[in-house]
Image: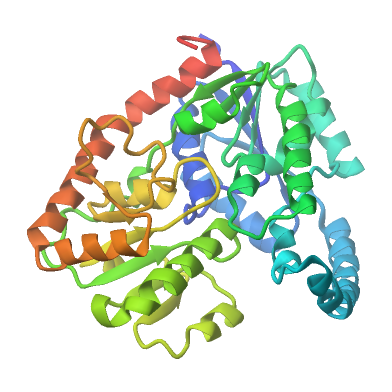
Length: 420
């Protein structure tokens, strides 16, 4: 039987599988190539990205990969962007005191960058490249991955089924960011929602990873489906839960704003004011700026490790912290922790889609405030068996609700319009 042809267009190369976006894509790509004739399309603008594509080819040999090379344009835009950034920085320094005084809000300008309106057009060259690929490819289905590809929806032919994989609903993320309120910020949030909704209604189906995101998009004309991802077997490296615990870990880079917001909220509001009571060190794994590292350099129990390729040693004797308070989707770091038998301490928001099915929550430790955290920490610090039990319950939850075969069938059902 001839396989249906599926074109997947993504702004991220899912290899190596070291961050949430890569994990979510790789999990399905490796399995779906058995059922579909898949072409993966992206943009490669440098040698490093081409090496990543070679790695993806080696990891999934049956995957067809095409890419648009945009080196010259990227270089030009980078030079231009650097000039604009320098000019903007000079202007910002001059006008910031005046605007801060006028608005009475100290942090307005500092945080505006997270409320982006990145619905930019694709380049002329890429649109021609993609249009030619679609016209010659004979695809039955086209799938777009990540918010950054949303503006490509009007380019896709009406007669081909179109699915948008919404890893993070941008308007929902922006509405939850904890920054001072203003008329302008509300304007940006609402504008993002209007434009995002208009694009999404072009797609035949929208895929999200949890019921909360589905509810948020309930007013769309397009059908919204819940189809979570799992953890690739390559990333399940811890065979058993630890029996001794003596440190916290936070995994995630500063480049994703919800990570930065979460870490600073936890350190500034909870951890540092109570460091004498908590005592356990916290290891921050991922790429962080010198500015942020310097901010906490005098704290003897906060360690920035940088990127760590093999997490096994970090996982041992650790409790995972996920104090995320904005964004959307499923937190890969929690799912990853469940799969590797790590106990997790999390805000309820961060664990959306990862506890609602459980009749009693024994697989994750929730906290929302400083008081909550200290209460839970005092309960667990002298009871290592409790933490081991939470870790094993987390793995049981992962095994029950994130079975690879079940998740694969759900995604195939989305493509086939089965049970949706």
